[in-house]
Length: 388
Image 1: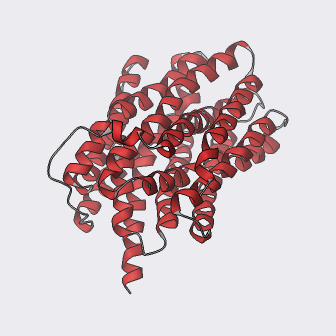
Image 2: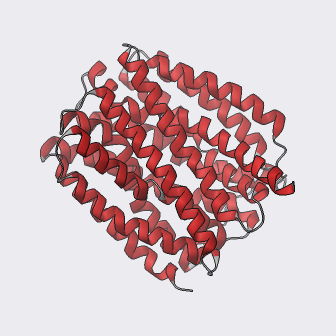
């Protein structure tokens, strides 16, 4: 009975993550509509992804400090309400600069997600199932992203993609109120303090994970940001097929997270090493996947190639955070998560505009080859972590 209650807690945290990800990842499904409505180049379209990630990144350490000081419940409730406000701002913005400003606001609000939910998983995870619980929570990211892809695609097909953001905002408010009612959480230290960055960086394993996070972040954010445009531009798929492909990528990414967590729990190794070994495999296979998407033609075959790629490249965050939280004490999870997510986001800030520039000047294939190189560099950075 206790185990069922613990898994109910995991489900509650995962449900919060689904709603938050519907809000945050809606922009990734909106790129084609933004490009058409505002007459954007691929490079300027990529700035939409950069804007939301910039707001996210700049607020991570502050969010981590608040979580460590006051617990995860209040930041999760307030953060989700703020995400709803950000979605409304995007929907009603009359110009592209105001859309970008609204996306920065949305990113700032989403900064509460990883520090708070990673801490919440440590509170609610059943004994001996921490890795699986972490990945169940992380499935909320891909499920939410997939739902947002479907939501925006349906709204855009009806001629008004902004309606999708308004629906996401309404869902965020309802879920925030339900979460406030049902989740108690664990109190923090009661004192806000600057994160011990020097102490965290003194660990060689943590430093290696940050390097890997940068390159994996470049890969995952660019993949989700440009699947739709690649499908419509390079293989001439319809907007509906392109949106469906992004949703399929999110589904397979969810399966990759669940499978990776289940494998890591069964490896007779420490949590950090078990997660790092699964993460290394995901990075290596992603290299092959990025090359493969450049070799296929036709909407259906390209959709399958991206779905297979998603299983590995979008399957990594649960393993990444499982490894990260195993390297630090529980009372440092907020700060450590902020550092790890910052590394991922920095990759996401740099890579999408660079990918867009390559697509504008040399074609999509060179961009996907560059992401294959990013995945390879991530694998190299993980090698020291896979040793007991």
